Length: 402
Ligand SMILES: *Cc1c(COP(=O)(O)O)cnc(C)c1O
Image (cartoon, rainbow, N blue to C red):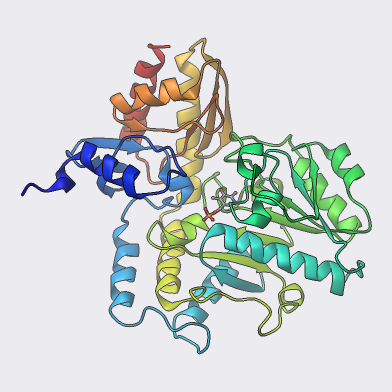
């Protein structure tokens, strides 16, 4: 009998037959990966400009994170929080010291950390700010992406994410992204928090106007509103700083991290806040069977070490500048704008981004459209000069076709 695993078409058919169709992936079946490179089942390599939506900032299968995973998996993987484990304390200390927060609450996927933050700020609204029961409001922004749970889609303005999934969760107020005046009008005595992505990733790599984050943060201080940054995609070096909020010198009251915190090996997310705020959660109020498990903790410590020791934030800044310059130099009439920060780059096009994305695949580069007309270029932060040249060469060729 032949091995179906060798055959991309058969694997695709199997997946489509037995798996829910909640994604529309490229027909690229990846078999292994290393650094910035993906290898498909036939051995062809592709430069990865998706990076699992920034979950593999450290590069695929980083040997140091891999070693931490293997070593820990052989000793202890899961205890639940019914008891303590010997890896969680070191993880919490490393994460809080690196980010400058007093306390962290570990979860697994990004959206679980978003849910945790929503519960935390609502509790702050009632117990600290004195908002009447069930009246707390969280201001969110048009075109946001905070994940796919019922609460996260309730915070969304994207019809596709919400349609026929109601009744949705009340208490979210929408403001156009980057519109300070609208934000000022939206807050009132029931506002407990403003929840924002410092750059909208899924929304099409949208960078707010200069100074917006700082002004929004100032407004929050004035009105005892918590400024909550969802840095699940923008954090941990991606935008050329450890966090995108650092660019404007803003320290959020609540910081949400995920994706690259697990180094591409394991889902690890966390909510960071002051001690006063975090202690609003009392034993039994919130939890997760897998959150803070020793395997995830060991992986996350290694994932953070790699970001710091390999200077991935400054490498993202350098590589990002070089790539943006290279794309602008292509001078294609199909390019409307090149935007972003560090290695979170969006190319806005006059044509559907899917056209370029399909061409790029032929030339050995995987990059996906975010919104209809925006191509996102977000390779692992370890991308070398030679690899940048390969990427720019492929982009040049792809733009010759449109
Ligand atoms: C990916 C993402 C999430 C959701 O993370 P999951 O791990 O997919 O649950 C939330 N917010 C932002 C900004 C993201 O990019």
